[in-house]
Every structure is written in C-alpha cells, then in structure tokens.
Length: 354
Image (tube, rainbow, N blue to C red; front, side, top):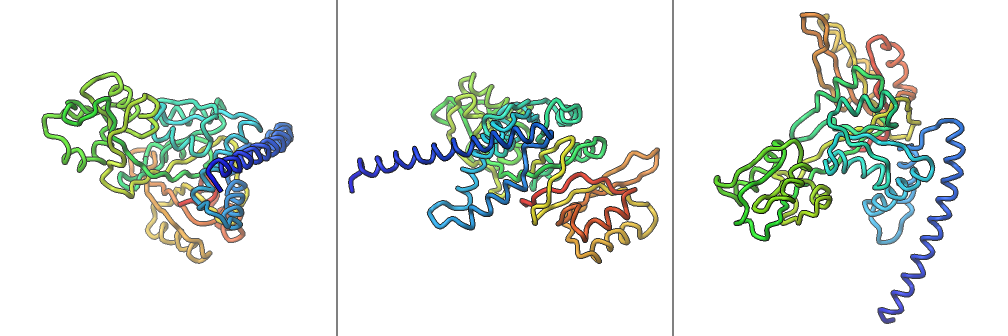
C-alpha cells in the first residue's frame, strides 16, 4: 500500500470522526437545554472522570491514557460551550500558568476573565459574575498559597475540582544567540526556579529584571532587542516570541496545584474523591489529637494538615486545613462532619487527581 492510499483512508476516517463529533454535539445541545431549565451546572468533573476511566480501560490501540485525556478534555470543553457557555475567572494575566491550568480544563474556546489578584477571582465568583474561578493553592517547591486559604475561609465558595499541573519554564528571545542578550525578564519565583540554568549560561553582566508575571516578561522581551524572558510556553506563543530553550527549571518535579471554585456547586460522588475542610479546633490541650483520632477510628485517610492563624482578638488561635480521602456524603465521613458541624467548614468534595 502506498502513501496516497493510506492518506485516503485517513481522510475517510477523519470524516467519520467529524460526523460522530457533530452527532455527539447534537446530544450535548439537548442536555444543555434540559440543564438550563433546572439551572444545573455544566461542568461535572465526576462525570468526565468516569468517561475517561471507561475509555482508557476499553482502549486496545496505540493511544495512551495521557493521549486519550488530552483529546477528550478538549472535546469536553467544546461540549460545555455548546451546552451553555459559562464565564471562567482566573488569576491573570493572559499567558500565566493559571491561564494554562484554566485552558487545561475548560478548553481554548471558553469565556475567560483574567483578573489581577486572587481576591478579585473570589469576588467574581461570589458575586456570580463568573460561574467558576481558577486559583493556585500550592506548589511542591514553594509551598502553600496562604492567601487562597484565607479567602476560602472568608467566602462562601466550594471547590469543584483540582488541577495538578507540571510547571515547565522556557527561555525565549528575539535574539538567535545568547551572547547578544543583556537583560532577562521574569517573575522573581521563576528566577529562583531556574537559577542553575541562569548561572550556567549567563555571566553577572546580564541583568535579571523581576516583573509582575512571566507573561509580562514575554511581552517586554517581544518588544526589546537584546532581551529575553523566562516564561511559560503559552506566554511565548501569545507574543510570538521564539523559544530558545525548553524546560529550563532546576527541578523536573515542579508541580503547582490549582483549584476550580464556584459559588453554588456540589459534586456527586465519583468513587475516588477528596474532601477539603477548615477546622477551628479548641486551644485546650489534646483537642487536636482527639479530633484527628476520630478520623483514624473511622478509617479515613488524612492526606494534608496545615495550620493557619485565625483572627480572634490579640491572642493566637489557629484553624487547620484538612484534606482526606472520601466524599462528604460517604457513610463513614458523614458522621464526623455532622458531629463537628460547629467547627468544620466544608470547602468541597471532588475527584481526586493528586
């Protein structure tokens, strides 16, 4: 069989795929009309997870799990826009890693609102100017984002889903040779995460200029000869800035975990969920140990516990962020939540991805 014949077969299959996708979108439109009458949420991460697991298990071809997810996450995103377009707010600017996390779940066609602060994202969700918000919660190199925790404690929002994302940084410039570069723009945290690359490739005579975001760095470098940016690929692409080096970060295991939040949202159980709560524990000796022991006795696996100052006069009081395996409606979780309803604030139960 020659190449032309193989290409004709590919063209025939592509047309079949397109016809089936259009057929799928007609059904999606019908679902959207039904959801519109009940004001139901379009984004259902537990349903999407179930579809991905079913397809991955049934696949016997060359497509890996990662490839299947990449294809279907975009199909899901297009489907949601056909069902009922919904606004998504995120910590901007455009081209930021939060923007990249948003597109990873909501696709390239969603109605996005880039905002200048995490607080603005919360305000947009609370006032229902946006149905969903995307915020960073922790980085495995730099730790927890305390502002996100504080704002979750102060606002009535719920976690819809988590988005763990590897953080890869690129070195981009209009210059063809690094010997021509005299300035490098980036966010201060990005400079720290790429310190070995910068030390190896550049002398002290090259100026490192901190800016508000890696996206801003790409914009500045795209307008200035003799400069470069340490930025995300999405930012370099947005400003047509050629990438000279990929993956320049010191650690190949640099991950940031993002959260999708909404004002009035509760996931159904997926069978493999995670729950996040804030608990205001008494300052009496042994109170925390007694409280945590109840999770052990209920065979609930605690995966995270972090303490944060709670505003209570001039003395020091603490609240605790807890994450554990399970859903708020699980039979072994519900009794603890009901017993401690006066000290626990439920933030969300959602499909566990990390």
